[in-house]
Length: 555
Image 1 (cartoon, rainbow, N blue to C red):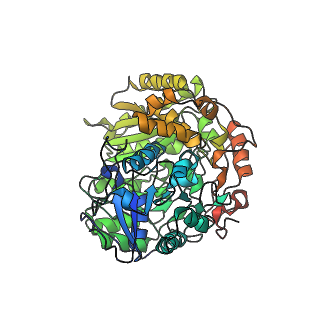
Image 2: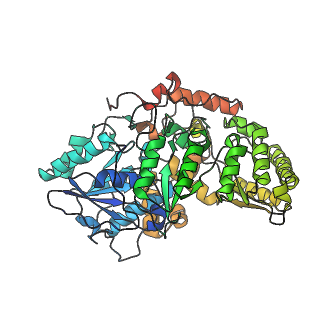
Image 3: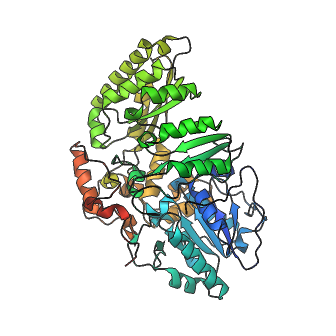
């Protein structure tokens, strides 16, 4: 898969020739501006569009669905969505669940799978497929559980042959229900094992943009995946668990991709960019090729004078660091593995070398957090501001701005916090107000926070079972989440507000991501005791059942 070549740049792909090909509509929620800045579905598109037996077209329903009377059509041929025998959905965020029933209904396709006696076949993939597919399972015929690789193509090749042989929807589902990586609700043997592309070692199929646009959220930028997964094992981070083992891309492969695309700018994407040993050599190579670049969040202990000096020489004005926890106790609870001295030193280097804008990430709403944790944060913030003022770059007229971005903790499936309760709306709002007051006295410091209602909504959609599909359908029919919540007969508190029992079944138990449940439970107990654990090895380990590296099977 490392030699994929499909690249469109600013050009829109032409409508594919249907001769002897299976028409596939690839639906990406959120509108095209957001979609073109997302990597996951573009890897899927590239994989499918390069397959000679498939005719792939795209559709971008807007984030809240379609207006009444508007029928969704594909971007390439303007064909109605209902005319495709296969509709494949790439879903990254839980809030995008709403577009699934709403778009299907607008296309004249019954949203509920039980009400679809015939094609189209509705397939869903993306992170939600191996986090918790249950809330949208009633709308979906089958989920792809894993990364886009050979087994993924085999699924579509099999479906193509079955469709061309004249088989109906039910017969097709029976034929594919136990293929590796396939979860057909109510049909597949469970749990279905997550499919990992490649073998332990390098990331052989780094994702990259096949569409670069001046209207994208990341304008005129080739997004390029440097690594997948994370070795640090932070207990709150779903990506750190579902993308095990951690893998780095090869330098030569990334160079090949950039030379193929020849973009004006490259955006490096990854969970631990500064862990990649080739980061600085790659940045220097990009500069030699006259390419601008940007980096996602970096670890504080990876910020060195050499790296920061080079970034500033190349015009990088913003650096983003993740603090995550307000206090040392909370950072131990999440197993953050951050020495606060490294964090302060990173701030000092940023101020010294003229970084214009320092962004800090923080998460609030931890189980058992107290006001004392935030008293410690206030002292740290005062120290950070003092460090900024001590440095020559911090004393200049336009000193380094600091923006603190605060999000609410959403305990996610397949993390040690899957047993944890979520903080209530009132408590979260109170904490956000406290943080806003804390930052207000400091010049050049801005605090932004998420909406606790939206965070609780995300928690409901992330942790609920198939009963949540009724809520999603109500939202699709009634025009939004808040109205649906008033009408829904379910109780969010049973999903969000209680600690789960050790052996309590979870809706997401139908999926096996390759991380041992007993290991996650032990990590939850260590979290409550604020004990740090070792990180994740790229070679896998017995505690995580090999990190999904065994031969894929549903047996």
